[in-house]
Structures are given as C-alpha cells and as structure tokens.
Image 1 (cartoon, rainbow, N blue to C red):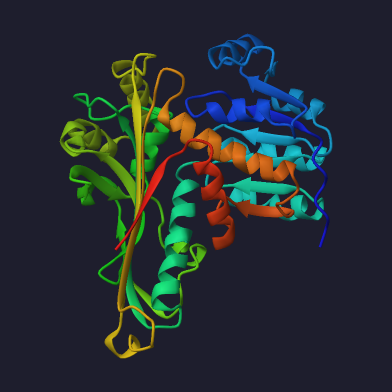
Image 2: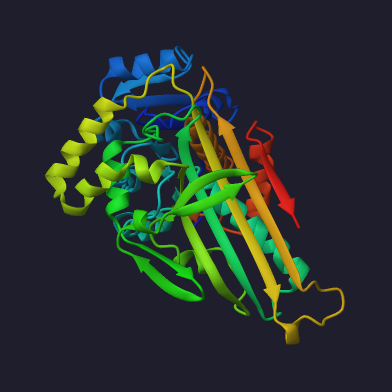
Length: 393
C-alpha cells in the first residue's frame, strides 16, 4: 500500500459561501496548520469574507482561478473545496498533479471517482461526504446500526426501518416556509431528480419527490419530509447486517410544516420548465426571498432506526426482540455563524485535521468510513460545540 504523502501544513480553502463558518476559524487556530489561504472570486471578496468571519490577518486572501491555485500547490498541501459539485473533479485533477490532498462536503460523483485511482497511487487522500448531509447523518446512522447489532445480534434474522431526514429551515417561519442556505438553483434541481428508496419492503422510485411529501413528527413538532436522491446504495455503506431485511430505508429532506402548500407555484414550474426556465426561476426566488444578515437559520437532522427480530430468530440468550434509537441534531444560527455553516464547516475542518495528522489512508474516504471512526468523530464534534441527542428505547 502506498504511504500517505505527509501534510505540509498549508490549507487552501476554496470558496467562501453560506456553508463557510467556524470550521475555517478552527483550522486557522490549529497547531497543525502553518498557512491558510482563502480563495474567492476576487482577492477583495476573499478579504471581505475573512473580515466578516473575524479572520483578517489569520488567513491569506487569494483570487481564485484553477490556474492560479495550481501554481501555488505544493506536495502535502490540503485543498478544501466549497465550490459547486461539478467543479470538484477538475480541482481534484489539479490536486493530483500538484501532490495535494483533497476534501469536500459533497457526495462522491462519477467524475470525482475517475481521479481517485491516480490520487491513491500518489499517496493522496480524497475525503468526501464530510459535512452535514452528507456527513453527520452518516455518522449517526453508523452509530445506530452498531448499537442495534449489539442488542439484537448481527446474525439474527430481523426487519428494520431506518429514516434519515435533514433540512435547513428558517428559525422564525416565514410565508415561504424556507430560507435558502445554499444555491437556489441547486435546491430546485435536487427536486427535479427522481428519488429511489425502500418502502414496505420494496424499492420505490418517486419521479417527483415532492409528490410523496408526508408529515413527520419530531419531539411533538410536525415537519414535512420527502425522499431525496438514491437511498438504496447506503444500505451497504451503513453496513447493515445481511440477515436483516429493510422494511423502510429512506434518506430525505425535512421542511417546515406548510412548505408543500407554500411552494405549489414552484412545483408547477418544475413540472414543465426547461433548464433555462428553472435557472431563471432560481434567480427570481433568490431576489424575492433574499437571505439577510438579520435572518437566523435552523438545522434539524433526525436519524432513527427500529429493528424487530423474527420470532424464530429471537430466542438467543441475552438478545432483545426489538430495539430502537434516534439521533437528533437541532441547531439555530446566531449573529456570529449560521447553523448550516457551523454544521458543515466544523465537520469538514475535523476531516481536514485528520488528513493533517496522517490518520486517513490514501484514496477515497468518507466521514463515516467505519463504525469505529463514526464514534470517534461524533465524540470530537461534541467537544467542538455541536450538540446532539441520542435516545434509545
């Protein structure tokens, strides 16, 4: 196995948008970091972002182009991409060329996977799915599966129901029942993508995910939830025992109660609009519902697992016939940092610190690569002020 390229101590943070927050400050304060360079559309905008975060003089502003970044990369540097997902692959290619490690909070794409073999051969870490969703949700799921295995037994025939719902919502509900915490175009295009999940023991596809929205009660508060993307591959990623059969397995999106009704006109546009029209709609919504410094956001992430052993397989001594557990993360933003920025950037910064200390192997990694890593990372995130609650029944 190729050894991991030792970290140089220089971190390049690319893009300073709505998901950048205290994680960047944590890296600036880390003893393992010698230099932090923050790249934005212009050097002036990068400097303004650093001033807003209280980091003037603690990180170096840069004007981002791929060529400019490539010219500054040195072996062992760490590149943190906060750019839109389609830009990750060319950025990763530049990292491989320059001998730099790569980290992002996005899902793994086929385009990124094409560069992973070369990165691994060069001793470089490619860390993905290291944010809120995906990221913390994976950590919660791995932890719940491990706890259920200890209670029920991995080899005991059983059925299970796993749901994972996450959403960035307004702390104070508005008429639109939503606050844009990432690019409006990305929000709309996610709704246009079919969702695959498991319901009543069978794989199901929702061509228009919002059409299967239903109420979901958390601690007495009613939300609306719907499936998102393709949930099915995560059955394997979460290492659920092969002796257990899925009755329900859904990874989805959480919204405020009343969202479905408030967005009715948007859905009508999504049904018939082409890419140009959807792009225009995204701009219209961004102008109509701007995010201001006075707004406070809220992040709610609820991951639950229920396991019921089959009658003939539940007789082993010391084993339970049923088990249930739930993790809940419910965070509100404040004047210093949005809830979304806190959750995404601090998780990502934790992953970067593990690249810096050499604990991640070359090649592709995710935040929740193993159950053991999940428990370690949850403990570390809890120590950094991200409060969450585990309930076991």
